[in-house]
Each structure stands twice: as C-alpha cells, then as structure tokens.
Length: 312
Image 1: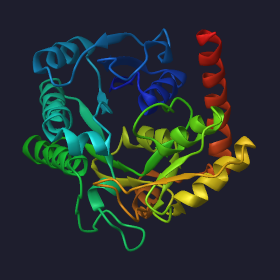
Image 2: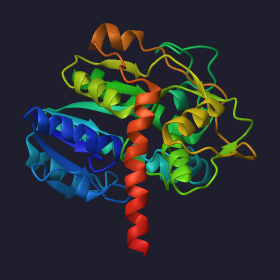
Image 3: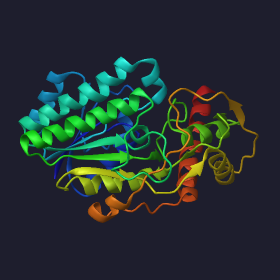
C-alpha cells in the first residue's frame, strides 16, 4: 500500500510510520515539524514539511504521492490551547481536515482521521459507545467533532470510504514529557527529574489509557475498512491518583504529588466502549497499563538522561 501520514513525525504518527514501513508499505510523511521530530521518521519514509492549513501545499503533496490512503494525524491536540486559542484550534483541526479531504478526493484516496473520544463525548457515566451523546466541553472536542462531520459529509457526497477513530488517552514512548498534553509522559518526566507530579483537581478524575502500539494496530486495521466511526480504547478506567501510584511503581521513585486548581475544559470521567472496534476492525487493546508504563518510563529516563548530558 502507498500511504500518506500527516503528523507522521509526531508521537502517534511516527509509530504508525514505523509500522507501515515494517510491513513494506511506501510512506510519505507530511509534517510542519512544529512539534514533530524529523529523527523519529525512518530514512525510507520521505518527509515534506507541510502545514495542513495551507491548502495549496497539501494538494501539491497529495498529487505527487499517488497514495491509496491518508492517515490524518496532524492536529492541535491540547485542550488548554483550544480554550485559550479556539481560532487556532479550529484552523488546524477543521480547516486542516477539509484541506486533506479535498486533496484526498481529487486523488481517490481513503482517509483515516485520528479523532478523540473523551473530548467529544464529554462527561461519561460509563464506557461510552459510538452512539453516546456528543457533548464537548472544550473547543478541542468541538473541532474534532466538526472534522468528523466533514469526513462523513465527504463520504456521503462522493461515496468515499473514510474512517474516524476516536482515541482514548494514548500514551507511550516518544510522548513529550515537557509538553502541556499527555499526562503519563508528564508524570514520568517529572519523576525522572526528581520532581513531584502535579495534579489538577482532587485526583479522582478518571481516564481510559491506551498504549500507543495498540492505537497503531487499530489505525492499521482501519486503513482497509469500508468506513465508519470507532472507539480506540480499553474500556477500563484509571484515576489520576491510581496513575501516579502506577508511575511510581514502574519508576521506583516515590514522592508526594502536588495539587492545583482544576483547569477549564477538563473532564471528571472519560472511558470508551471498544466493542464495535473489536467486532468490525478485529481490534483489541492487549498492553496492560503496567507494561505500557514500564516501556514509557525506559524511554523517558533515557531521554531525560540525554538532556542532562547535553546541558553539562
């Protein structure tokens, strides 16, 4: 298969590129490198530095690629940024997606959209199926929901086979421990630096944490599907306090967390029902939280150690 991966130098995108290359696919990466890192991408996958907000650049890249499918992972994914700069969030997540869909239509490509579960469903009273009410409480969820609606509209308009994947909280190696999103990487990064994790709220809020390799497996399965919307999660809840304890176990670092005021747009409970993805995509998350955290800790400890050496 020939594939385009937008955001392919980023956290999830680079893992997806690795998996595509490993199975022998031809891959073109589109990334503006604002947060992605070129060195994460294998040499066999060329990179074009493209901002998905630039329609002409997207169209030109798609025209040259002659691909079968586009995995659209380029996004603004920080809830807090979306609250502070909703216009920027919409430019990347809505306009960027429209540009990708238009270019894909012109060149006969399927699109697999990386969307979000928790931010779209809002507060959950149990594992949310794809039919659950969609009640975003932050602009990030609204922009991703809008992107999904454009995806469905293009599919109806042109008879395309597009798929939207509503990821739970994806974590794993290559996630930025210095960023504003990705609580697992942030917690483990602080532990590696001898700093206490900072919890916003009382720590009882829950999330569904899915390991990046499992998210990639679901994404690969979606590449050949006839279309639809699927949750990509575990169906299991973990509180922030439980996550801190698990991070301490895998790292061997014990500390007392700091508590701060809750932040606007943050959910109290978010968990996804993965039943439909298991039935139609053959996807099931197989990595335990403990094993996933251990692999992430090894990566972050090496990264933090390397940064300390550079500083010295």
